[in-house]
Image (cartoon, helix red, strand yellow):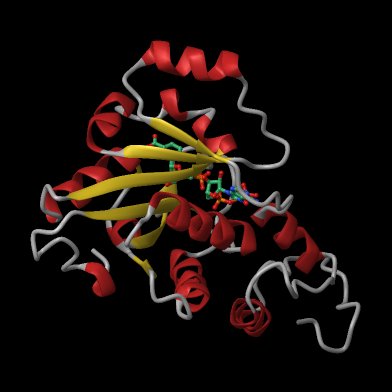
Length: 225
Ligand SMILES: Nc1ncnc2c1ncn2[C@@H]1O[C@H](COP(=O)(O)OP(=O)(O)OP(=O)(O)O)[C@@H](O)[C@H]1O
Ligand SMILES: O=C(O)c1ccc[n+]([C@@H]2O[C@H](COP(=O)([O-])O)[C@@H](O)[C@H]2O)c1
């Protein structure tokens, strides 16, 4: 599951585990800040970042090799002792569905470990379309964090409530109007990623030549970090 937190709850004491799912192509400070703020707000003992294998809703576009996305997640979470990364979804063949992940985590951890699935506002708006979303909702609570550009209206909340028994807590987090798409575009255009993700992740991207692609612009500075 997650090497660092495999034993969570083994002592029988109540514990709370956050699940931060995403494509993480690449991981950025928006992901890290919302996981940290959800951890603090909900008293989570740990947050496990789980990069998707083949993301269900992004099959129309090319996604960076899973090994690179996993490596960048590992580099990014390393300094936070409450964070870890799991390769569970990458190791599972086929398209990634959250229901399989939540079932696996529920089977692994004892009942005294409560699960919280952390999602951004854009993801929560699509949750009713996730495979077996009612089954997911029976196994985990959701923390939906705010994200610039995605308004979760009262009408949407009411509609979601009418669709199923989703236990969703809405959390206002620091507004960071950044996305992985924006980071990929910046590298392609020859601009720095510094301060948009962690330095080791910047370094990894440049060393591996990720996101350059054909027709990429020369780097705008001598030190592209
Ligand atoms: N800046 C942000 N603020 C809040 N939540 C975010 C932010 N960026 C991503 N998230 C959330 O993190 C999770 C994983 O996101 P994902 O890996 O798809 O990143 P992304 O930036 O949305 O990627 P892309 O631009 O490639 O679509 C999703 O639940 C998403 O809503
Ligand atoms: O299970 C599904 O049908 C499903 C469909 C779309 C997204 N998700 C989950 O939502 C999280 C964010 O996904 P994404 O594609 O926005 O990076 C990630 O954990 C996905 O597994 C899950």
